[in-house]
Length: 510
Ligand code: FAD
Ligand code: NAI
Image (cartoon, rainbow, N blue to C red; front, side):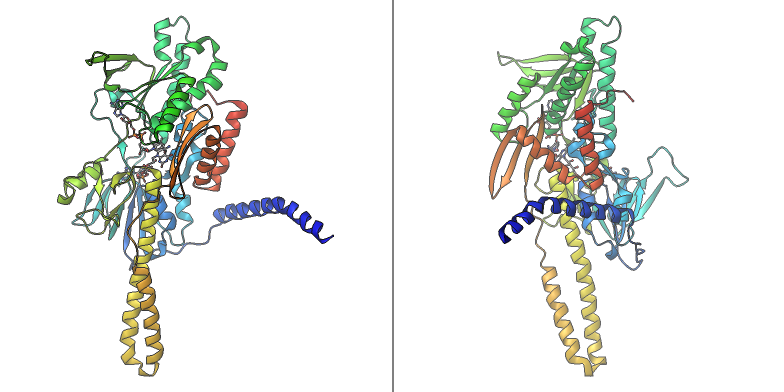
């Protein structure tokens, strides 16, 4: 009967969608490997210089119609880094190359070619409209320092690690912002473990070496502490059982609780989960000094008096947030309108740097009233792409209208047709020019807290929805997997997750 025939088709629907999915992904991969030829930049167009290859700059590049400008990208890092999965690289849950996307691949996919210089921008001269750049890589040619002129400039250089000038931090801590940081941590964890297992090591030294201290209870510190404890429970403990009861993770936070930007219920959930995982949380503990083997912190004792506490450590990871990069500080010092800004370049609602012309800023180096997150940087980059695409269209339409108006007198026979075309252009112009200021739409916050659990503060239909646990972890995984830059990244991350689950993390020290 007809009804059963319909049912048979419905039954096949999942298979058909799976086949369609595979074909779609396959076609995407084929397209990436065989891109169309690119057009050369047009010297009559404006030069748009973009600093950085992080969340802000790459989101802008992804959506920018590069045929409208001569685009130049300058960054010391020739890849985009998917930072949300960086803590997983410190223990080998994910291999670092799985979350890197070469900037050359990103630029090759654009319609018109884009120039890329692997360099640091060391200073910006808004008067002369030039950026001074340095090649700081290991191999340098005759030309290692030069200037790049711009008509329009986007600053997306992110931020550096805050240390608040605390003595010893720069010399003795590991940070967690970039790939080399994660590689160093991974190496040091195993170095501590192997040194602790060295013949005749004293018990005090074993305790010190196996004490992993994390300073900063923001999302970076919390996610790293969770990953570290997982690594220990799932791998190190099994492989080196004789030292297993000595491994400890301590998380030090100056405020009364960790994850201050999450809802109260999730803070409590995280703290109780850490207790179960045996991660020692020390809140209201402010680190004041670091030496090669100890962290000195200040706490307020039960009598209300300040006391100093010493934490001997083997590995110290410093995650106390962001500080302004020197190139940004230098620019701010030259712009009177920026004199009261402390956390970065103050921008207006169109992300124009206050007190400048033709300079925009995105992401962690910009102060637009939002938290320094990938979500904000990504949306700002998308906004600028729309703005610049519209600006180019506006200029083209205005030019067209000027030309058409000029030809009205020359071709009186075509006047009606030309007037219609002018009207049509003006209509388009009105629509395009009506671009609204930047508005950030918060999708929610996610953080991994160890033992296959995550916390999520998600914005749902104008409301807030807070959840934590194993199911949230599945949501965390699928959300980050879908946000990975490319299909290649996604496949590599899935492969790494499977590999570390099936065979354990690779504990060899490179
Ligand atoms: P970045 O992404 O840091 O990029 C800056 C770029 O500028 C880099 O390419 C850098 O090489 C380049 N650069 C630096 N100096 C110069 C210079 N002098 N000249 C030219 N280029 C320069 N946010 C979330 O929303 N969700 C998360 O889950 C999340 N997880 C995170 C996990 C970790 C471990 C970390 C460290 C951050 C995480 N964040 C997360 C925050 C997020 O990564 C940042 O907010 C985001 O990267 C900011 O984007 P950006 O483009 O401003 O800077
Ligand atoms: P953060 O600024 O969020 O947290 C740093 C913490 O360090 C603060 O709680 C602060 O009180 C503490 N601290 C500062 N000095 C201290 C000291 N001397 N002793 C002890 N504690 C001290 O920094 P984090 O975690 O690096 O994050 C930076 C940005 O990146 C944030 O905006 C964050 O939201 C975002 N991010 C988001 C993630 C996510 O959504 N999963 C993951 C990682 C970062």
